[in-house]
Image 1 (cartoon, rainbow, N blue to C red):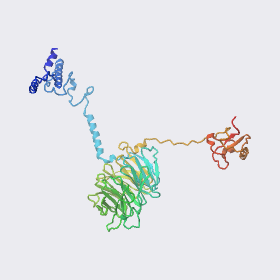
Image 2: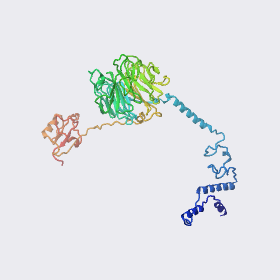
Image 3: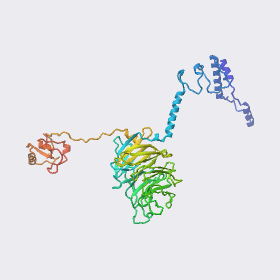
Length: 574
């Protein structure tokens, strides 16, 4: 009791304000406010109690601490028995859980392994080749002719392929099983080859560019949404007619505006369109040669920000316009590729500063649009037999990918990867024994889609680096085929009863003559209500099925064709 009393008496924070109360009372003219309750500073009380408990523990256990007065406010004060001697040498920042470590243990080994793992990850980040997803592949059978168009929606859920066989096939990765069958096949442009397919930025519609003069827009399920009008071929100035007048070569969607797309044609124009208006084009760009003559654009594309329109032409030039100014070009390279060859693809890098062009002169070039007079890098010896041979940038902008073509039985078509900075060939994939026409590297899935000259569409992926896409369908087992239920055994009908008002009943002479005609045993008390010509009739017995299946057809020796006979007894059932 004495010790408790001494602790209570030592509290320094009991507060009283008698003087302030007296001053207030004198001002207001009365003697006081009554008896005031005492207040306590609880934080100070707890701190004082904690210090007292520490001192008493040290006195009882004989443990002296020279830093009691100076470090009492620290949360690292020890309450309890002293620390064992073998642990006093450990560093303060290590949390020890469990028994003491063995004498020969070196704590830096685990740290060294972690450092090695971090160094390997850094090496993979620095080496873009290790990011190529080519460890696994699946093959989609589009047909037997060239796959000339590929498109994948922004989410990576559906793939669309088009080819020289006029077909457009829809593939749903989430809905396919290991059989890898498309869920829909259409011919949107009748007997015209499909030259280009592309999903809009929202993924709800598809642009279809074929060998005719009218581009079409389909929804996700392949139903028509819009068809561009055809222009008047007898008008000299192509800007004054409402649409293209010759075969289309390419087309693409605007990267920012969901309702705008662009097409180029053999009529010498590049036109932009609005999805909400199918009466006339939005703007018309007319490429011109050095002499001011009309030239044919073979490919077209938007810049990544959508402010520029670029077109590659048959005279080897690349011409770029401001999207809102269609009269004069903003950038113009006169000798980008060999004249008379088809520039098959133009694509901008993701950072928007570099333009890559795939030429019909077996070259791949990169350009800085800020200095458009000469190419940054050139790769030669890349054979291209198709006018829509693709090239694309990797999602991290460090690699440039294109395909090569081969003649029949002269090797395999390859997918070639170039380093964007040094433009050295760093990797290649043997695809198949035909040319590689289309290639697409999806940034979200990290999977590469390839269209070939022998009707195949291949998808390359990595189970670790890739996401969804082909990984969804390869894990599903093939669905069992539904077998149609067939009658494997003939049933011999010995007797059936039927009321007279449910069925037409021919007379007895008709039934008797029928049995005689087929060398059957005549039944004098039976009539045949349905007779179908069958091989079993010549075997001397009647075959048939249940009444519910036979009662709906009236017997006729001319029109009946079902493979059974049903015999009924005359009269009512007894």
